[in-house]
Amino acid sequence: MAKKTPAASSSKSAAKAPKSALQVGARDMPPNPPTAPSKELHVFANPSAGRDYVIQFQIPEFTCHCPLTGQPDFAHFTIDMICDQTCIELKSLKMYMWSYRNEGAFHEKVTNTILDDIVAATAPRFVRITAKWYVRGGIYTNVVVEHRKKGWAPQPRVDLPAANVGTATGLL
Image (cartoon, rainbow, N blue to C red):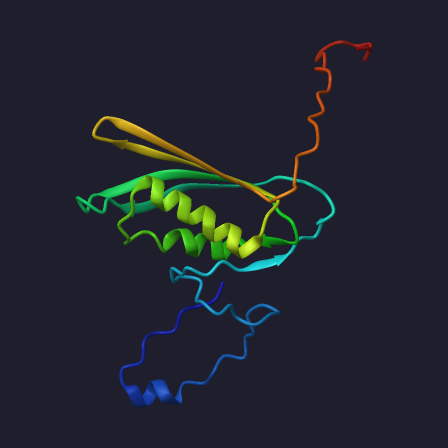
C-alpha cells in the first residue's frame, strides 16, 4: 500500500518535489477525469458484433431534481441493449448518468434524452430503458422507452424444457 506524503508547507517546496516514476495503466488517460460528470459517452468495438446478446446495466442511484420544485428525484435505471458495432464504455456511462445530478428534469424527458444519447453514441440494434422513479407525493412513476434499429428483428425465442432437479435418471 502506498504511503501518503504530507502536504508541502510552501509553494517552493512543492515545486521541488520529485515526480513519481509510477506509470498508471498501459493506456492514455481518458479525456475526462474519472471523478467528473460528463455528457460524453465513450464506445469500444463490439467483440461479438455478429451475434445478438443482451448487455444489461443496472443504475440504482440515479439522481436529478424536479424542474418545478427543485426537490431531488431518485430513480433506478435498467438499460437492456443489443449492441451492433460498438458498446458503451462503463466508466463513461457512470459519469454520464452522474451529470444529471444537478439538473432539473421531468421523468419522461430525462429518460427519453438518455435513450436518444445512447442511440446517437452506439447505434444499437435494440435498447430498452426502464426508469423506476421513487415515490413522490405518494406516487411511483415508471417510464419505459425503446429503440429498434430499422430492419432489425429479434431471433425467435427458444424455450428449453425445465430441468427436473433432484431426479437421478436425467430423462426428460
